[in-house]
Length: 129
Image (cartoon, rainbow, N blue to C red; front, side, top):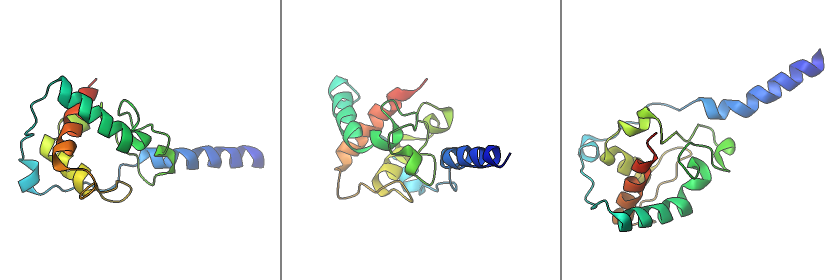
């Protein structure tokens, strides 16, 4: 019986970081209302995919399901970019979150050029189910 309780506790503790999404992420109106300046075409998506693969896939997963190799080590679920909750966000909100980060999400300000963050946003928008 004790073994069953310990096994159950172990399984629950391994899945907890994947269940919570953290506190609501407030995005300033200035960013929320920003329009994506990229012309979404094959080149934009290619660049966005390259930058996403290098900087984001380890947590967010190759196809944005939040199942990257580092996801289990995070305090919060990195998010499912195929889900409606992600896809109802404006491109400006996605840009802000990628640029400034918070908690487990690193900030890419001064690491990735704004134009490349916009390219990533365009690529992440392809994950819709």
